[in-house]
Length: 51
Image 1 (cartoon, rainbow, N blue to C red):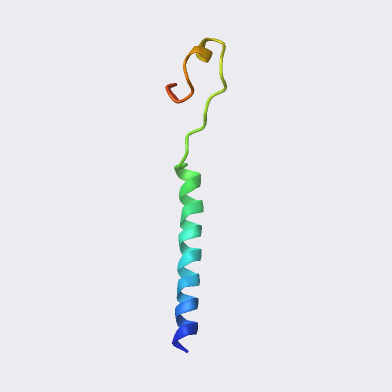
Image 2: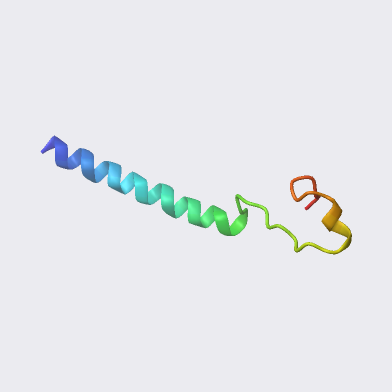
């Protein structure tokens, strides 16, 4: 019985974390989009470019 309760509790907590992550991703994305490369920016490596 305790095994089932533990599995259900951890499953519910995983869903809560996933749902909160999806909600927060809409408000504040966890990644930055990379702008397309212009002719002037080709001399600058992608990791040194500003957003």
